[in-house]
Length: 454
Image (cartoon, rainbow, N blue to C red; front, side, top):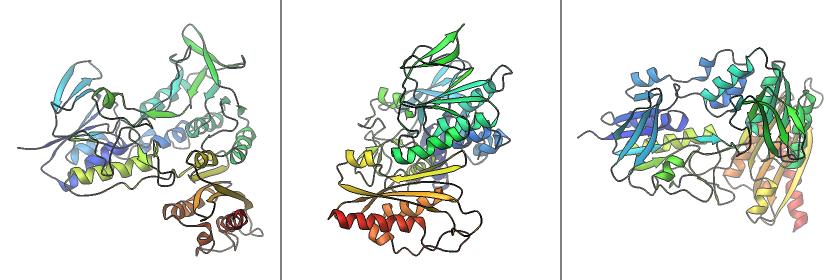
């Protein structure tokens, strides 16, 4: 009898798993249920399409549903899975357009429901011109609102990655933009000293930045948002409100089915991406991952992790063997003309994990100082006291800065000490780096700090 794999969610993790399983098992029936009309798209590219840096929305789509069907996957769009019965090995599917429901059986189930934008329970939060941006449908809806002729003022509630990317996109199109953040500096996964550079970059683009202010309410008139009120009573007028308050794992479907949810809020999986429930797997933004530095389970919503986890799940579902070894939280973004990157632990995270550590930060240039086009770069590293193990790093700078974080991510992944990083054989030529790359200088300063700390 033919076995059947049902995949819930048709983006990064779900389609990676389905494709891998198909390559390994031609006899496996694979059905994918996706509530939107899109599959295998770049959610990270949405802000750049909204800002017209990417001209066509279709450029964000790696493979359409029709292309997946041609590869032997039964992709059903406009179909939302609304219930899971692990004992009966079936899912309840609702047709989004008609509301009709049906039951579909499975032998194996992969949950790849992703994450949801945080929407706090505040007055006015559900107004039609208040937009979260997580899936491509969200981007389509936001762009339609921005394209209305009377749209002039955009308020972004929250200064995380997506919030700042949308703010820059809106500013590039000529809108009056304000970002409101409850933290002292934007992108809270960066330490404040790096965050100050990010704040300066935002203000330098002409974007208003309000910090240390939680959102208290969305003011509305005739059901539409007209402004954002902060905890101190200030009101910031808006024709469009964009929620950049972070995301949370989309686990309600799994929780309702009795599938265990961990302390970090994601679905519990083992290294092969299998849940504690027989026949049920999960991957992507909805699951918890093991952090290789802190030793804790975390939820980090990144497409890099989702694709890798989906690949691991698909190999196993296809009869192979693969494991997902964990994460260290490496991420980069662009804020105006500035690039920022981070990996490993921030100071706050290192404290929470119980590490004793030292820090070092250096200011340098992306090229030899005498070479035309040399740009500023700041590199900060955290090293464990005593053994000197590299715990985390953050970089901010102009063109050519951010991807240097990959060197430090590799060092952290391999548990290198900063004294070892100093001697890495990195490439050098004046158009690309000083003779002492800023990464090596920061490691050298951190090694000296470790030695002084004893």
